[in-house]
Image (cartoon, rainbow, N blue to C red):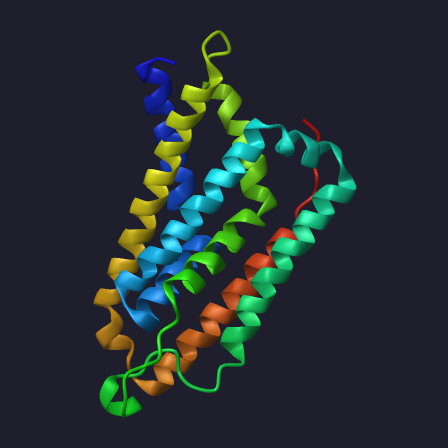
Length: 213
């Protein structure tokens, strides 16, 4: 694998990662609700989920998803169902997502780091679109005449690094805007938008069609 292939892969991956998706929405949501430091844990969970998908693609799961309609639909329904759950959780929330300590009267109870990590990991790991993306992308940049494991580790590390950077930037920007978003009515509106967007992403996954490779 030469430098030109690495640069090309980095460019393609950066464009794909910069496009907002469930992981981006989760990072923004956690940053607004609990602070940017808590968003780091969901970003790490997403990166680990991406690593698992990358490994699965290298082991041939992506090709299997493309050839097996039953398996593809099972993974698709699982991923969409989890996003629907996250969306409904936001929409049915009784208290605003964002409240100042003065309005709340006490410090907001924050979830554990493990809970944030696990939620983001499941969101990434149950996304069949990402698996298909890795399956289509990796063969274009891997030198079949060289050892596969080092190339897999390099490409995956680049993708995970770009993902962490992108999500951290989104979380930091959201945190800077938090002062504007602490008004109760606006906060409720944000919660509705976040919940509806999660449901939209779930519906988008359900609408996916299997394509042969």
